[in-house]
Length: 264
Image 1 (cartoon, helix red, strand yellow):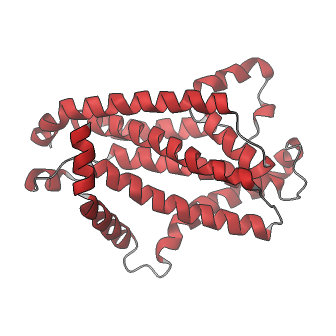
Image 2: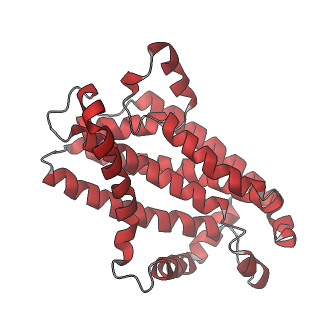
């Protein structure tokens, strides 16, 4: 672990330049550039809001705003988008960088760091866009918004851990690359983002405790929608769970790093 931290520090310039190059390449010859990173999730919010707002807006008590459902959707999407992007990046992290891993001699641990930094930049842009839309819709926020700082780290920790695990397995079993996007779709609908948890029959709500994204999305809703502090016990549990996943991901990564290059 210590050696990895030293490597990350020594290669910090490489991480920053690679992130800048990746973001530039992603939007090359694009008139809107980085705006596409926020247009896609916001377009999804708009579609859901137009289709479901009349049905579900009435089930959101405690929000004195006629755009309550759109606000609820954007808050949940902000949390989910970072998690989903990191898992998707981690899934193809090693397969898409096969040539680099074979030809260049550098600490492989910097690849997950590049993914985290790139996804973090996209998440910041989305957050700023959401804040502007909240302002235009007349929805304010208070000092509880600063809880989003540690929450973002928890989401990033969970996402990159799962992404690295999936990415390592995907090197040896390529079916994982087809399976994970399906899991993400099911996971999205199993998380109260598009709908409030109150519409779930009470006898089934306990199943939400099996969803690691539920306490995170619930915290985002509490902070951004209702302006109250998140439930600290739930966040403590999910933080420990994410740290455990990270340790497992790093263990798997260390054990497989040499074999991965041979397989790639």
